[in-house]
Image (cartoon, rainbow, N blue to C red):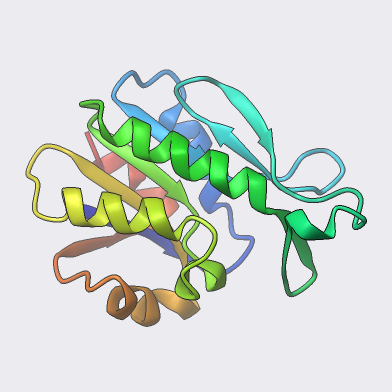
Length: 162
């Protein structure tokens, strides 16, 4: 089953997932919070480790993807995709991808892992994917990934998932 955690930008979707995943043994994937300096990073749930996402030095231009005001490291996406695809081989009940956005709609960013996980788990009864998608991109994401069976949830409704 595909669950789509949605809401406007900066309304606590990632924070809600942090709380919901805390202490769970049946969940893996990536969250994308901000650090104390406002820089985004990937947080690997099962490993409880951070992976730098935002470029701090724009001279690394061959390793940078720019979208809007953000400058992301291509190498971080490579590592994040590998992590998610490896996690898909395990029998964890929920896999989280935070987030599916404009980059993924251009077949970049976390697109390779998203495509794999959605295809693998869309019709599965016991293994699920939780996609974080801002409310303004839901229709585009559903069309891009040909998602036909899904459930929309908000951060407050996460607790209904067992």
